[in-house]
Image (cartoon, rainbow, N blue to C red):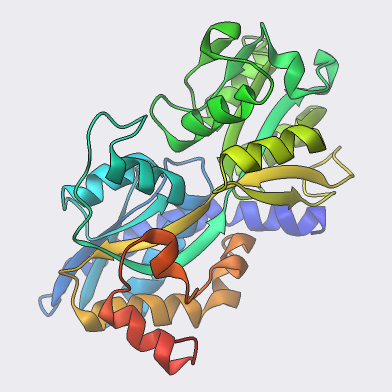
Length: 326
């Protein structure tokens, strides 16, 4: 993607969020609203938040007699929020959904997901191992003994960072972790308070793009043998590429890993609402790509039931059948 297009895309984010929030307040005055629905997404600063804000704004315009709001969260924490039925819709990380169901770390118990229903497969978020060029760090192996921002405690990015560093024999006690998000991490890198940061966010990541405009950066990638070993141990990691030119000063393709996200909802969501949620998103991909290019990789994947181990919502199934993918 051309740099000017990336910057133009990122420049629309604030406006989209403002419009989404304004639309939420305007929509709540509708006495005819048949239902209010909340979509849990990421923290502001991640790619999911502006994507969800833009989508919610579109839902308020195009899904009749409904009121939609966006709620900040995370690929990990959204599993708890949806399980507790505090929201009707959520974007969740695929690996964290399985971990929450089984009560595996970072979750301390099993979370009931019998009321989860699948809608769509979201793009995988690219792993961004970020260092300043002046640091001299050239490999993930060099992070041993360093100060590394590994996303917020308990987040999906936090868990994945430990898994990938494990390929180099780097455990929790072998570096100094900082549990902060990508925007805070960028500032800490500039100030010299950390040596590296990692986050899983769809490229182009706003925080990384902003940092690259003012500072020389390097994106680290795993060596082929380490990548192969990681995939064997954690098969849910998908190999990805951050295209060269996505960020200033990074002209070559960078190998990355990601875990596809899932657009999930509760079984109590009316069939028509679930149908419209899927139809409006898939029918307006080009418009949504103005918010973030990652929308191009949203999929009506007929294998989603086996991937998530959850049934398709009947409303989503109606859409899949209409499009001939079921």
